[in-house]
Amino acid sequence: MMDSPLHHPLPPYGTLLGAWRTGAAHRRRQQPCQDAALWQWQETATGTHLLLAVADGHGGSHYDRSEQGARLAVVEGLRLLSEWLQAFSHPSQLLNSWRSDFARFLQRRWRAAVLQHHAQQANEEEPAAENPHDPEDPTAIVRRYGATLLVVLVQADRIYAGQIGDGKLLRIPQGGPPCEPLPADPALLGSETHSLCSEAVDKLWQSATWQRQDDETLLFCTDGLSDSFAGPEEFYRFAESLPLLLQERGSETIARHLPEWLDRYSEEGSGDDMTLLLLHPTLDAGV
View 1 (tube, rainbow, N blue to C red):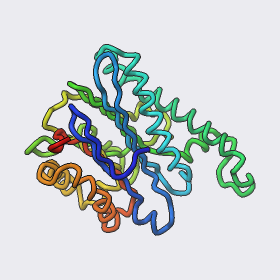
View 2: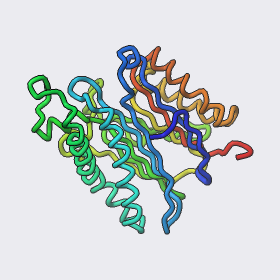
View 3: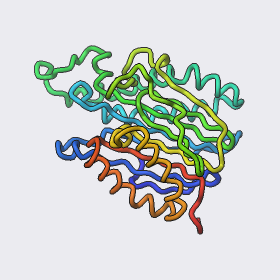
View 4: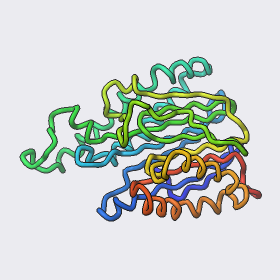
């Protein structure tokens, strides 16, 4: 996993910055952060690629290993995407597979990693009579690790995004309103979300691709942050303010302040864990 706060120049794509924090409610209950984030810089014969993943463990008694589930999700998501970049050299191959097959392979890989982790932890489990989970039922085991996942691939001319669950991805053009290429599923109500532990993840997978814009800031976050605002409009106004702040104060300064911002939003808002990553197209002077 990455250090927090994060500030990393990634020419020619700009600067990647971010932070992830244990939520106020989790701190009060002495629970760990159930968010996870990971990024990878990859060179191939077709160019330079930035791979990003953000996951959010569900928490609660039914998902008592969702912290590990989120960590396994970002690791397996980027590992699979890295392999696909090597396997599909032509953009059309990658695009078609991204839309139709990635989620199916992802769920298979994540599920295998979960079951392997469970087997490694088996000797440390409480006796079966005291364990509320069925130690032999693979479905029950996988459910304990339930998590969402947002995966993004940034290339010189195109961006690929896909997710299972309620993570947020915003495109923020310079001087324009944000847009959400992966809008929330209207069938879900309240805090409901799809999950890597759901059945038939390939049917719940959302994906989008678009031409990369040189002046566009990308925002990635877990729902702990977006849920801390009174509504989508307030969250969008917060997002729209970020490019100007980054230009005026510099990305390194903003990166230093992100942890305290997230702590405040959690304390005054959702109380949940929070992860925020920003890919800002401008490099600070002197970088």
